[in-house]
Amino acid sequence: MLGVALFILMATWKRGRELLIESIRNDDPELLPFITGLANDNLHRTSRTAVYAVANPDTVPQALLHNLKHNQVIHERNLILTVVFHEVPWIPFEERVQVTPLVPGFWKVQVNYGFKNTPDIPQALELCRDQGLALNLFETSYFLSRETVVPTKGAGMAHWREALFAAMSRNAGSVVGFMRLPNNCVIELGTRVQI
Image (cartoon, rainbow, N blue to C red):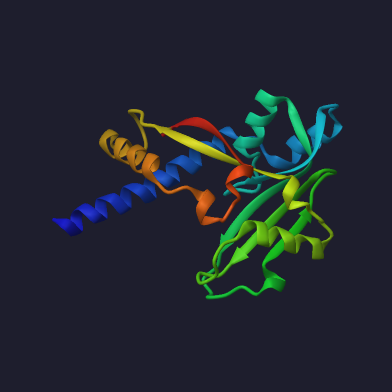
């Protein structure tokens, strides 16, 4: 019985994450056309750096959309950050960070870790200097998307499994401590996602 219960929890979490990511991807616009349009807009720009942590670097981060909608501001330097864990124990510092310039003011940054590496995003961002992107970490804000899962009847999973996933999602640990982000520099912007 214990094994069946654990299997149900793990299968529900896996399927729920798939549905959540699929739902977010369907609603988010593509990144490159969106930021190309932003580069031509006369939006007010603040002189700080914004780091938007995302799972999919090809779509616009929810936190960026909310920041534009509610604060009507964009930062001078915007990093679309993706963290990738590889199936090797260690990734050396020389291979830890990949920086790709997109349009003026926007960069795509991929941070690579092995399964034995301890994630430390501020430390990894210091490595961007070697690739031509110098950052002042004291003037950097980390924007995170926080999704509140709303179970709905219909496709996806059985309603009781969606409710179970919503409860597990609410109780999941925060990425802030795991990635060693400085607490006083993190801004979480939430959205409600129906699965």
